[in-house]
Amino acid sequence: MTNSTLYIGLMSGTSMDGVDGVLADFQGGAIRTLEAAFVPFPPTLRAELMALQANGDNEIEREAIATNDLARCYADCVQKLVPAAPGPIAAVAVHGQTVRHRPELGFTRQTNNPALLAELTGIDVIADFRSRDIAAGGQGAPLVPAFHAAAFGKAGTARVVVNIGGIGNISVLHADGRVGGFDTGPGNVLLDGWIGRHQRKEYDADGAWGASGAAHAGLLAVLLAEPYFQQPAPKSTGRDLFHMEWLDARLAGFADLAPADVQATLVEVTARSIAQAILQESATVDAVYVCGGGAYNGALLRALATALGGNIAVESTAALGVAPNRVEALAFAWLGYRFNTREPGNMPAVTGAKGPRILGALYPA
Image (cartoon, rainbow, N blue to C red; front, side, top):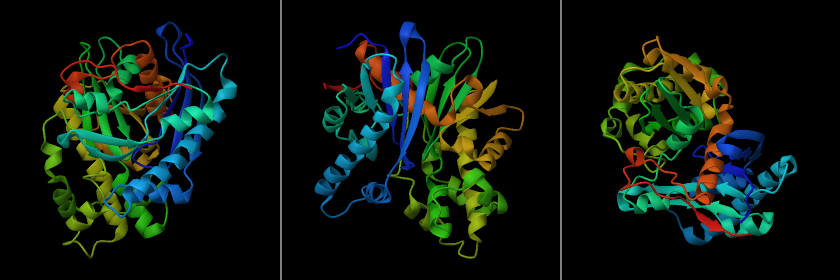
């Protein structure tokens, strides 16, 4: 094992648009991003990963084939980052692609082939970060609050970091050093699904389509009646709960609504569920910083600011020095670093695990 402090972090999230990667240096305990890259998923791979979210025929073989293709995308992203490394890279830390998340049944599955990735890159690979937390009785998610505290925490200042990917999650960094957090519910998953159905687009750029409609109070009330929103923490969720069939079942009584009005309502669902979670977790918040794809949705950020009462600053994590689309990949690079230094990566207060655990499994080059 090298003593290098250089790590590559790879993240392909619930939105399933592709692979975000960063090359990071943790020398002296600092957190520095040296380079970033993005590799989009080929349409056929994205379609298959989407299909694997639900039960289907021949799942084991289909998943194995898709996982090999996924590893090649990961390797492509690594190759884009390697030239920027000023020295040997200690490891590639890769999250994998979540296809099932059922902590209540004692498992989570991030499909991945870290052995193939190690073979393709010639670099040690650290993977499977969530399962140890679940084995210890936790939710296995969210894992990013520990990183958010290390990267963005400031003594005496109450901050909330909101990741809006397919699913939303919050990290509450209390002024006294305590850290809380959990998955809030849908982030972009329903927004992306709805615009994909009606406009054949992968996402609503800057929330423009949603902003063209008007939220419907009746539909909003039905959607926010989902029991998950009232469930106490620790809790985590994913496409296992929030998917287009979930939405369709609740649209049954609203067939006359214009599609843009449904999109506007979905913006409110994401914004209000996040705001509700923040206000329940912390009575005093100095600022809210947003990362993930949702940070680029202006309509969503405005709705979140309004839902928070209009008196809390809502900015992207760029204000703290990290671009919103780099935060999660950087978090997994940091978790890889923690694995190699034999330090815990989870926060039991967040996940509900029995205690701190070293997360990950090593696949040597």
